[in-house]
Image (cartoon, rainbow, N blue to C red; front, side, top):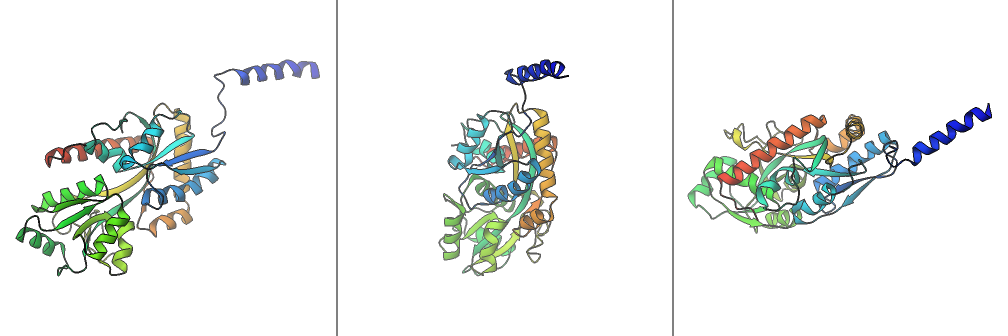
Length: 320
């Protein structure tokens, strides 16, 4: 009996030593790269979802921040990583769509450099103004901006904020001055202090300031009102359906990652987002869990990139 087993063991050992032998995925810790500094929305989403994915995959998941160049630094890192599923990117509206409209040389192609895994979450943007402005509605903001074109200053900590504000300005035929910022924190502090007049920012970042009455909230940019702020109207309700803007996050892997690995990661994401605990963590921050198939997310990325590239061209925004 032992003599018959020995050749089989030798054969198995030979197969495992062969360079093409595929180990069961994942066979080591998975790194989710966040191309922004700690503390932002994308970082928050990554850490929440990583908990559930780790349990489903029975493997450690490490969230690693690689900020720089509006997210392009960390995004490029993942694009050039080994396509084995152990290095992933938590991409968002900026890195996988808007940056293509605002930068000449990204170093990666949102559609070709990655294998989409799944959409994670979406959330609206919120239009906020400094509390000293003697207005309380979007209609009044438009009237004020038209009365003195170019007088109001809007803060934008990133390309997504800038293009969202320009989309709003274009739809309402107003003109405001762009004040660039390196991050949402400094811009929100300046808005609360009255140094700038307007800011269109992700709901989860700006709403705490609205709750504390440091900033006035006027409206949200999603198709439906936020459950956390049902008193705020949508721009669609106010007659501006073309300014529907949703911030989003989703996981992608380097292009060429095997389909079975992508499918396993996708199942882990969907199972993670079905957890009541994880859903509560996201919704309490104004985020809506939005799981998708890899193919659905691929189509969404392509449509978003097309939309923002077209808008940038329409408003004459020159890529950096």
